[in-house]
Length: 378
Image (cartoon, rainbow, N blue to C red; front, side, top):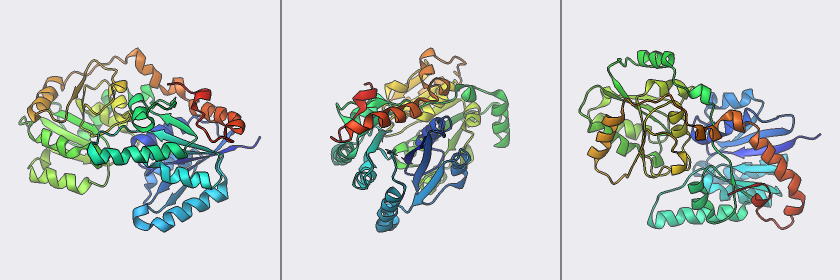
């Protein structure tokens, strides 16, 4: 039996949420049925790529549009024409329309637009993203979403398939050995209280606000652990230096062992402008951490009693008070409803979805309509 060829398109291959989503599913997909490739942008993170290469997945890269727009589209078009994929699965969220349009005009019959974010922008900026989302929906044949709010933002009332973000719960359980290892490594004492954040250092994650809040905590026992890399790294480090809190903030690169760092934390803090269904929030809850997050976070991801949502317009003192009140309220209970996001329950789901689409594609492609209602659910 000929293997179906699948192309997963991501903005970058790091240790971010989208990439972790893909890895969790692809590490369980039947590669006797599928030949999976990944298309990403340069520069490439070799450490992050290694885990996909180990699975037997091919990785291709193109320059960013900003660096060389002509080469960006030329190389993509050449790849589409050469490989003749059965499915292109695009994880660029609202900006997916570029790739989906190229895929359509390259003769690729099944084009999936996957919503991973629900943006909280207002005014012209929100309108721009809505236009992008509409174009992406137009060029797609199938709509996937990580959660209800991401789907509503990107698809409106259109039918879509809910594909949950999944994690290995056993892997993310609190581990005291990991806690001691990480805290000793970075000279964090038993008396210190660690506020943790696991996110790309990018505009939508709103680290500037997070740093401002942390700077208002006068208790010197508090440390801030920022795990992630991204375009704003230099700017954020400059802000930390200007505020005079450099000795209390630990910057770490994105990691392929995030579970160790959650165990080292005492409270998880996320101040994002936009989140579709935050993978890090799910991981933090699985670890038992109390979570204090911005109101951009979907209610769909709340499964812990130690979960506080605050508006970004709230005064800093409100955030500080909640951090202080909740810093040592770790729970060891994993809520039953969280099992919907367990790898063990969903490990072969993506492969089954691909097969179902391909089996039903012959009749559907003629009209080029979305087919999510064939196998999907709202």
